[in-house]
Length: 60
Image (cartoon, rainbow, N blue to C red; front, side):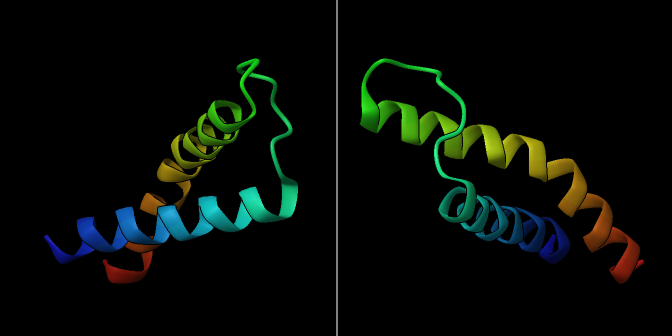
């Protein structure tokens, strides 16, 4: 259970960091605020399997 929560939290931190570094590279919406949010969600979904692997490789 703790590893699952750690995975979700670490993924959010990594996605937020990527969003701060890269910015909104993908044009997913015409509205700027919605585009920023959709980019953050996209970074989160891309990073989730990677962080999942790292957390469970370290914990396991």
